[in-house]
Length: 576
Image (cartoon, rainbow, N blue to C red; front, side, top):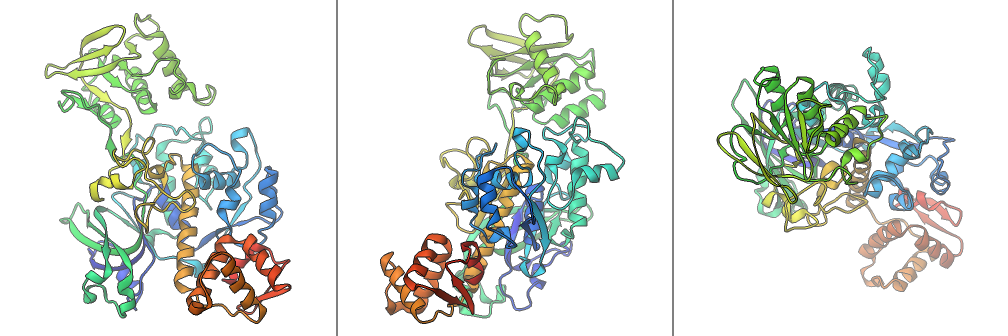
């Protein structure tokens, strides 16, 4: 979880090295907070800390339409551009346009075999720093630390990297190489932990913290003394109250409470394994994590003479379980709902040359279905079957439409059918924030409903969601979410600090005329009206400004800067 604009800490354990209440001695709002400390939150922290993407001088993007847009940007920061305009027409393998845009800038045409270098370069500007706090139960890297370290990633190794630290170079400095261009989960976890350190982000991370509650509060209902506020103007703001406990092996849990203007949910999706919901699933021999299989094998509770284990699921985690058990000569019964030729089966979507181990599992699934051959002794697959029930005597019932019910005696069962995010710290576990509010949050089928270009919740202003919660399951795509969130927060900060511009002569008349033409307010509310017109002009960009200049006839003065018909519209934000 990333918290931005935290106002104060009511009770914070001394274990928290980062103290928001010391950030601003005036008691003014500090920008933000984020629950979850995986790659989504790490990338967001990197950009919030003042690192800004720019277009490289002389860079050429293979997409001619996007290249023409990029040529207009010049030396201006990417965050100050109309990101929706840049993303228009860019295609990729994510449903989120910002994810596709950022990935296209970093890895141009990579999904189509392109080899062009990134068109982005990063510059650090401490003036653009936005105060924030990242909360997480474990070390930076999130759930990557919970995986078996010998497993390889589905994505290419270079797709796991974050801005500013080349993953392949980092691996080589460790004296290691990528296997089939893929990395182990241990390497990825260590990379993210090292990234936070080398990029100077540790001061923003509060590891060993468990968030228990996030809820909006009306600032006017809070005690003035508890927040150290100095003016009644602050009382009109809406805040989020974040409560939790600091986890420590040496000391008891210590509660803390933080107030923030914005909260970014970046908790990922591996907290709560999915369940079948069948009878007997709560028996002690039924497990829902592959780590339990690893432990049973290492402790020699399973072996060649054991009753077969049951693996439920046809995803990559289930495939990893099959490989692990098969390599240790543990007999396996493998059941899954899909047919072997179903296009939705992940194995039918992976290139065989890049993922030979998963295609080996797919081959086993094909050749060992009923009746099985003897090519892979000890393994048997059951496509188009589902689990009906488990019994206390360690028997399970499988059922299919064509073949009816089958009963098997097993030693253990491993239900590996995916996982769901744990949002128990939100009201109603966040159901009111989803696309379909009748069902629980599901990263694939029912993600949090967010604005496509800001990632802000459409139900709760000030609450953002990124990464798997917003539908981006791959590291290469979640970085676009970090860019979108930061751009939104930067614009919010500009709105809070905006002052009426210096508008002279006919420029005043032309903007009023445009306002009347657009059905805006009259001169009677001139100060507030002018400020709002600036924001409208900034949002509308080129069409409105061109109209202004046509009416004005020559030029407009803003903050002493002259804007003419030759001024690129993308620079106008810096004047407003």
